[in-house]
Length: 258
Image 1 (cartoon, helix red, strand yellow):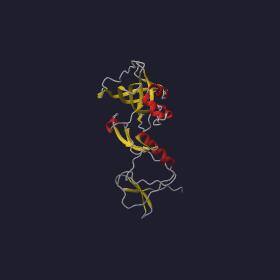
Image 2 (image 1 turned 90 degrees about the vertical axis):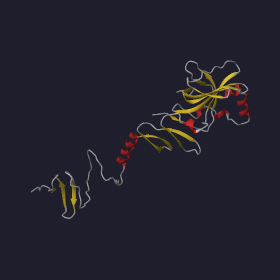
Image 3 (image 1 turned 90 degrees about the horizontal axis):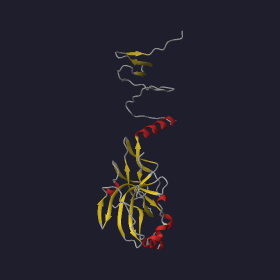
Image 4 (image 1 turned 180 degrees about the vertical axis):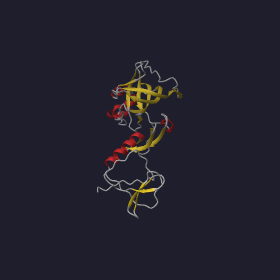
């Protein structure tokens, strides 16, 4: 199953540490950032940020993709390099895996990330990485996966991307707009019909099946049956059961025990 992109208005902010082997960013928590960054400290002290509600693991698991913002900053909050992209958490929820970097911001210029993730280097004791989730600046940034549409779920004015998987339909299930496979729809329909105990009315003019198994077959009488070989119908006028053999109608005669 394709991992979905999760968009939330909840703010996550943690101190990060680069891993130059695979470009993953280790998430060190929010408390260390309180000591490293004066702007973050001021925001916490003024109660603009709740230090106990900033962790990525509180809002995402490794089944979610999300948009991220990484900033190389000094202790006074001056940012020298930023990267925006799509990522996910590692299985232990301790690393940010940068799946698809979009662009970097350097000297006020937006530069497409054509060569993969930026290699962040904390060059001095005064520099550190700030890792945040990122709310898209425009709808175009939500189209990060092929065959996607923009939808909304249970929160007003919060657009979310939904990727339509192959051989699937778009629908609402479990309070969420999602891609629903045709196989799951057919399986669900089959199970629903099997467990349905009331009368089921199908208004289809024709149903083609290979085999019919039933305890009882009720034929409604009518006067203009199709003259096709194998057609069976109940003739109410003469109270008989007849079938068409390809040339003419024949009455079904039950053999007598005598």
